[in-house]
Length: 221
Image 1 (cartoon, rainbow, N blue to C red):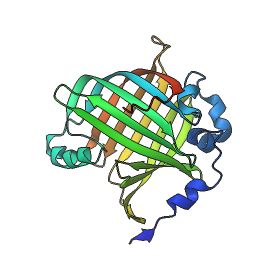
Image 2 (tube, helix red, strand yellow):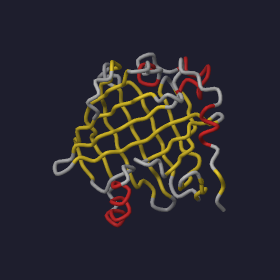
Image 3 (tube, rainbow, N blue to C red):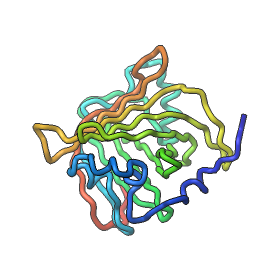
Image 4 (cartoon, rainbow, N blue to C red):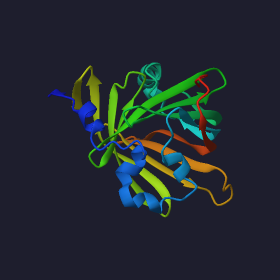
């Protein structure tokens, strides 16, 4: 059953531009995050961006029968059908005027570049992430800090058509762990996994990158 979305209203509640979306959701637990990760998950000043680059050891899906669906999702900048190893990538995080956070991720495969876009806001005690170049897929995300690492788990999915939000069944669950490795302390490690009932892991990217925050150049990604 379709329902009108309250995302725009919820996003504006308690939005503090001095804090990132992660800080507002984690509250006091944010202090338990590894200090080296707090640059990535902390606030970005207006007019600045956060930029990262690195290599994913693995990126994509091993299930060939999912390629038609993933190809459509690639066109919408959500996921992609390729499976690669040692894939160069970049990320640019940009704060929005409403206190949210937008991100553009690029994956440089041998034959083409794939893009993933999303925009995060805070709703209650959860992050709400609008995926794709038009934000058509919504994901509610629970955050926690474990031994200094940030963990994210998706808890609900919804399809957005204009201002209408249609709840979806639990088709898949996203798990993310981001931490600082013991061997490469200047790089942060990320492992994102999407699991589906019966199928198990259907999509994954994992690797490491370096990150910094600085003035926006206006050149984009």
